[in-house]
Length: 418
Image 1: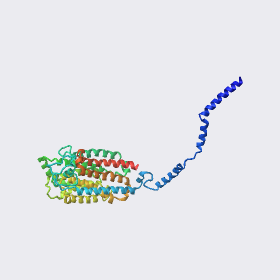
Image 2: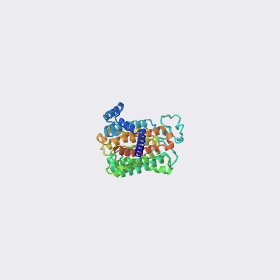
Image 3: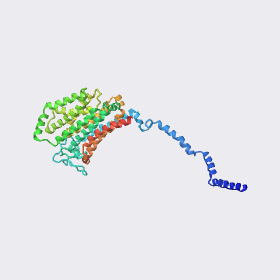
Image 4: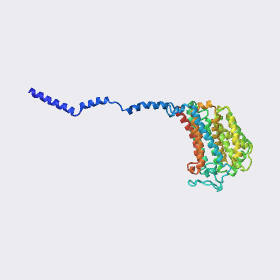
């Protein structure tokens, strides 16, 4: 009996042992021990040796050290990048002034109509120019020119006024941050933001003038507009305001009045014969808007601001009346704002103090590319493709690019400075 039990237990134990043996448990243990002694292939060893060597070589390049954003630690490189963008801005601005035929008086009997496939047409077949035909005719890119409320001038007025509101709100809520980012004194000053509204008011004036006035209203404005007091008083006031220490006038009232003065100047040109000689008052009324927007392109802390803006104003006014021979209100408007970007670009490259410029290296580079050059290229795109852009509002695209570029400056500077 005992023998039977022992044999039975032996058989059971043997079957269990054979079961583990058949499943390879002992074999797996031995394989595991053998695998632990296996060495890595030679190529894997080389990979781990070479990788830190490559990194060491890359770390020797300052532009790649710490990643692509390491360039932000090199102000001189950022300043050169900004200078490149401003040189391009000055080049394209000058080229646009040279290529636009300001001495052509548009034909009101043959308005430029949208012709999206033909590229528009000139009022006279003899007029040939590389710029878009609708742009050359109008001096702008005007959609719905007979509409009192939907032409491009009015659309620009709506856009400029509406965009000025969020710009001023952004400034009021982030004033300390603007100071810390070195934006408040110059690149995103209050004068620049309110100049957007002044720009829109000037468009409003052009819209009213382009559609004409009733005989009685025309006579009334002619009487007021031709008086020396009406022309000289606003001009003298704006010049005083810009040079005063009262921020309310220097940063807010001046650009708005500048827009009104520009409209007054254009009204005077519209009511006078094209062949008449310009008076000293006309030089003054044309120069004041130049002085305002040129001043916006120069930091308020620069003691040379007034002299540089005044010198640029005299040169631009002389060229506009005697060289470019501007014949229409719209064209004189083009000269003012194209020259404003030209003057700003020249100042930032050649006249801005290097120490101040280095402090603003990051916002300067961003401003030069995302505002100065971008807006100038938008102007060129409209000049070259006005006919195809009429469906999108024409010139309003240019006006929108200005405040939008200011938002880009703020948020991009905030991102990269952090």
